Each structure stands twice: as structure tokens, then as C-alpha cells.
Length: 400
Image (cartoon, rainbow, N blue to C red; front, side):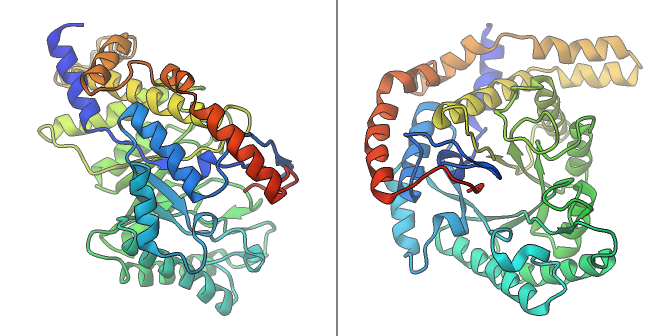
């Protein structure tokens, strides 16, 4: 690897940070049940400690996303939460309101026809915005399960109008530096229609909401044939791309480790971002890169390290594309030569260069092997297994 390429890789990695999800370290499952892991986090302190270990090994994960109802108890002192994160070597990242697990939300939350339920859901989001301000978080990330199961169940236009009105109210509660991300999902849990089903709907809601609202692209929330990089390109061009939730998919809502199914697609997504920056004189847009995964079978911390290191690898491969030459080939209509530029970068072995970047920053060249050799998992597994027994935690039913 020559010095010029090493420098490009170093520069790319130096500004590439990824937020970890608190829920990715805890026991989660499917609607059928949970498969418990001895080392799974049992509370927010555990989650932050585990995230801190991943950050310490990878050097690129300084923030931890939190789910309000799963991570914060009534009466929690925000200053103590901030201190707890700092002790673990991280800080609180995006705040995620929870509008899908309360019984009242069986017919929807912010789109519900019942004014009382909408007001309850709305207050929760406002409280989440204020919580973010109290814990020094500048991102609120909204995903909701609202939708209908049967034709005629509710007015689709009516639900759209209710949501537009509510989102507009939220914008007024944001601090000057707070970003509000609107996520979408094509289906599930509603079977007939989903209220925010694709990027276009998120775009419209965010645009109407105000200048501090943008679109969140979850790489798993797309149909199999969807061209995600086209979506990314459009949102970049309109300055409406706010962030990502990283995972991979076989269907349209999978929490698989990044790049486990289609690493070339993730590379192409990153290529759109690097290409956009190249067209802007090297200036990169402000994008929140976040992981959204819950693993039942893979060891949780190892899966998180696997995703982060895969993201780093694919990001720097995309940084190696010669975008100036690519533009020339595109303008000349040289289809094969243009594609070869992408394939050449994607096929480049960057593992040695990334290892050099890590060593230059006092990190182990292989974070996964360093984690295995650290003994951290064995230590927490012994402790948490005993605590789980004391608390009477079992694997019966429920997603979270």
C-alpha cells in the first residue's frame, strides 16, 4: 500500500464515527421469544460499559444511542446518566422515543384517531426532546409502528394530516443544535399500510416539519430490489440526508451484521457520499452514522465489532475511488471503464492499511481478536449470569 493511498485511508477513518445502539447489547428476541446470552447487558450501566469496550477497541464509536423507555427510569438524574457514560468512555448519542409498546398504541400513536392517545404520544416525544437536551444529545430519532391492518380501518389521509400537525409542533421544542430524524419502514407490524412507509414520505414529513428535520435511512428497511444508493443520492442532492441505521437485510427488516449479505451495496452507498463530497470540493455533509442491530444468535459484542470494522473497511474502499476520473468516464459514456473504477476500489485489500491506522492510534490491529483475548466477555458473563438468576429473568416471549 503506497503512502498516498495510506494517507487517503487515514483521512477517511479519522472523520468516520459510528454510534452504537444500547439495545444491541441487551437480550432481545422475536415475537416468539428470546435466546438469552450470559454476557448480555441487564441495565444501562452494562450497556454503556459494553459500548465503551467496543469504542476502546475500534476507536470510532464515541456515542451510544438510547431508547427512552428501555434505558431511562422515572426520576433518573440526567447528570448521573451523563457521568455514567463518561465513566465508560462514551457519551449519550441519539434519543429514541418509544411509541410502539404501550397498549394504548394498538391503533397507532401519533396517527391515532383518538385525540387523547395522540396527545400522550406527543408528550412522550416532547419529553424525549427535552431529555436529549439534558444529557447533551443533539439528535432525536423517530421511528413509529403506526399503520393499519385492514382496508377502511382508518382514514389514510386523516392519519397523514394528524402526523404532519404533530411533527410541526415538535420542531418548536428543538434546541438550536438538535436534529430530528424521521425514519421509515415499508411494512410490519401493520399489514395493510404503514404511515411512514418509504423515503419519500419521510422526506415530505421532514420538509414540512422544519429545517432541523431530515431523513433517516435504515439500510434494512427496504424491499430486496430497492436501489438504496439512489435514495441516498437524491437525499444528498436535496440536503435532506440526516443519518443511517446500519445493518444488512435478506428481506426488508433485518438486523444482520453490516455487509453480511451484500457488502457491495454498502460500498455503493458510501461511494455516493464520497462522490458527493468530491463534487463539493472535499466538504462532507453532516451525517449521523448509527448501528441498529439486535442479535439473538451471534455474540452481541463480537457482532457489534464485526459491523463496525466492516463499515470502516467499506467506507475506506469507497474513499479510494478516483471520482475525478469517474466523472470523466461518465461524461464520455464509458460504461465499462466507469464501472471498473468502482470494482477496482471495492476489490482493494485495505486490511493492512486499516491495521496501520489502528496501530498509529494505539489500537490493536484486529479489534475482534483483541476482544477475545481481553477476557472481558468471560468476566461479565459470570457476573451477569448470577444477576440474571437473582432477578428471575427468563427467555419467555417479547421482543425487548
